Length: 439
Image 1 (tube, rainbow, N blue to C red):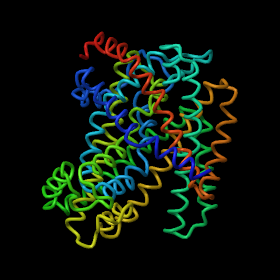
Image 2 (cartoon, rainbow, N blue to C red):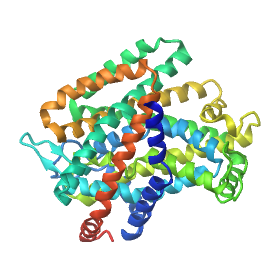
Image 3 (cartoon, helix red, strand yellow):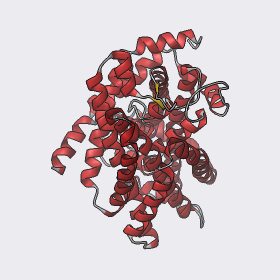
Image 4 (tube, rainbow, N blue to C red):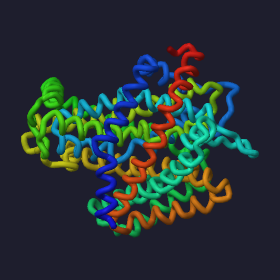
């Protein structure tokens, strides 16, 4: 069963999916006339409230919740794995994926706000499932997206993350996995039982702090490796377009392997095209779908263009600066780079991994809950939260090979209906953007 699902997942996340996602990013970038040029204006908007607007959480709260689910262990360990498999050139391809992915994240959020609905209690509901239903009338595809979202939330958004925390606590501090898993489950329950407003409050305070500490660690390493930054950039550029493997990459293959693993990591990290972030974007207090779309698009900028790029540059410069670090170290590359910071390097990285994983658990709980609500109504909200907490504990105490494969498969299956929706409604996206004088 595990091998069969692993085969399906590998086929789904192969070149066809990568080309579909990257192709959508580029298509929307061209058709929307490069919305990336508004990124700094969008960042400013994310810190200001939209007066007289309606929604469940602030624009910054929605962005912080989306970032909590997006910025995870993949930004730390995943980039190292991409460099291990694809060589230093994977860093450039990962970065380019983030740059173009801003357009898709913008498009998803615009549709989420346009087609969101308000229930009798005044709560907002939106996301790709509502865009598919209300914008295109494709109910069956909307149902499939909701099912895949609920499954992916329990897997890669929950069990996998808790497992990473429990194993790290055991390996670093010899804390039994059941104890750390119980603590994570209790903390998760305390936060998510309060609903999206509780999740938003925690993430608004939590995400900036954890990201700032991690970025400061990266900046410190880059200062130490200052003389190697230019050579690192040259190596990354040369490796990204080299017909042969250059300075690393377990699989070799030059440009093909660098592009494959760099693009795959960027796509998986920033979730542009996955359809997850628009679910919480629909809950934001805003009067303008274009305004919220711009704010939401900054999530991809912070996740990939900043965090993943800095991680990649830290890894490559550390390899050049310290001959004891090997490109073939795989997921340990980031750990080896942070270990060069005296005394606090390793604890800082451990703190980053634990907090990034926990924030992902919080963010994905909301996504899964909204998927279930679309299928069964609000009566399933509390039962799902309870199930989510139980799965948090189970995830930290059991082998997760099968869960990883099921989660990857569910994530891939989320992409397909979401991308179909975005492409089918691209005319609506362009029209609404033009009406707001953004083109």
